[in-house]
Amino acid sequence: MSTAVRIWAPHATRLDVIVGDARIAAAPDADGWWSGPELPPGTDYAVSVDGGPPRPDPRSRWQPHGVHGASRAVELAPVRTTFRQVPLRDAVLYELHIGTFSPEGTFAGAIAHLDHLVELGVTHVELMPIAQFSGTHGWGYDGVDLYAAHAPYGGPEGLRRLVDACHDRQLAVLVDVVHNHLGPEGAYLPELGPYRTASHATPWGDAINLDAEGSREVRRFLIDSALMWLRDYGADGLRLDALHALRDTSERHFIAELTDAVRELERELGRPLVLIGEWDDHDRVAVLPRADGGWGLDAHWNDDFHHAIHALLTGERTGYFQDFAPLTTLAKVLRDGYALDGAMSSYRGRPHGAPYGELPRDRLVAYVQSHDQVGNRAVGERLHQLCGLPRAKIAAALLFTSPFVPMLFQGEEWAASTPFLYFADLESEELRRAVREGRKAEHAGDRSWDDAPDPTDPSTRARSVLRWDERASGEHADMLRWYRALIALRRATPALRDPRPGSTDVTVSDDGSLWRITRGTHSLVVNLTGSPVPVDGAVVLASSPVLGGQLPADACAIVRTT
Image 1 (cartoon, rainbow, N blue to C red):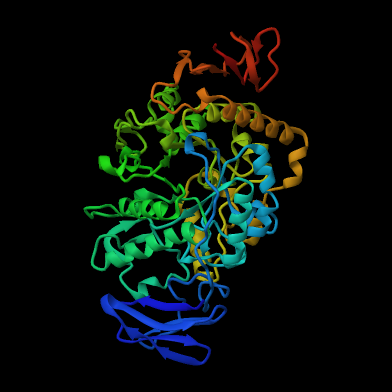
Image 2 (image 1 turned 90 degrees about the vertical axis):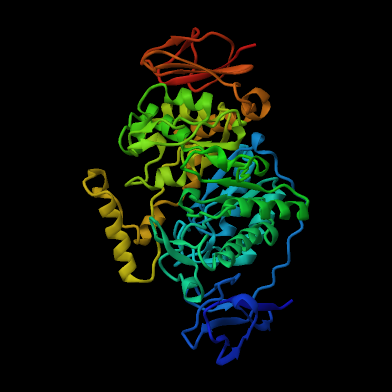
């Protein structure tokens, strides 16, 4: 099978495909497209617009020479798999970063630890972005070759083997994709066409062009890349990064168009596909069905759950946590879905969000740690390092007894000693300096950032690599047993997975120190009073020994209610 080179370059007067020393003129087609030669697998090639320098093919599937180098033709036939993922209401998601999940930092390195996830009770592996980005190691949110599986991770074949290995173990695979910006290094797309627009501003500069002239092909480019992970690699769904940063005034929002395309592919493949968005605006339009005027996503991340638990257990009240200072905030999230649902946000200085209403709660993904919430701290502390192991156990119990879809972040389940730091591998010294200075400027005046490591130093990534050998010892083994027990209990107890509105009853003392969260047949009792309290009911699971019917301070217990 050969690769047919087709390039969209609507303003070009000439387009060449470069193979070795040869320049092969592409033929102009309709609507700004150019057709080049068909190349056998393994051929290295580049494209040149109007005699300019060689650039990667924007739809390249493999960039073995990095973001500045030639593309390589690769044969990728659509994957046909018999694997079927479990519904989200029964799911346990696990977010992992390929570059730090194993010492090797590769797809192959991740395969070696999949059995741990199976034993833990995970159902879905959510991969942080794997599209080609600059350098060897980074978070992946600065991708520029959106069709190419990151070569240092193992490229296309490495990713296929990882997906196959997950499916062999009954693990679904979700791929995190970024459509809201391009990375700062190797972003050659704007040289080929109007991929950006000055009509809208984003934190990364000009927005991706979703609604201005030429946007039809830009939208198609992004949607085709998303469908590729599902069709050609057998992935089971996508996590869509920062939907609130997609600027689109079109009659049909880009996400709605993407959802329609995924549902069409779902029917073609005959297997369910999942779409989960990161959605800071907290408006239920994201998860309303298309027939009801929504975008039709299966779920979106519920930051309010994290923020409310973090504020309650750590006492932190700065930044966006100031909106979660009231002791009743977590109770509101558990009952209503959102905390910020149209009321005034002190952090933003304006009202934020809209009521979630009567939608099922399994359209919200909850978590107590994530790459953002750990990695965007100065020194990458995990929750147990901020509030202590007993309270981290309480956070886990709140997560797995909630009506939402639970998600873990790698290493959380054994209270990993390693931080998760921000790091970026850039070739340009100018960009490295900009990243270092930008991080400092962003947090100017915050003394906690005085000790923040250099994100461009390779040792920063090295410090973030999980230490798998520590799982079997001391507090790490104890935490791992707790997570396994919680996940097993959730799996065995339908009431704990009940997503219906009204399925969660919460009572909390006036001072916010004693909680009872009832989920049908079971209740979670949380004691933050500072002294033991009596527990009513048969204890099913407890974070600390319950002696004489007394629950210790900073502990929790799950009891039967019937």
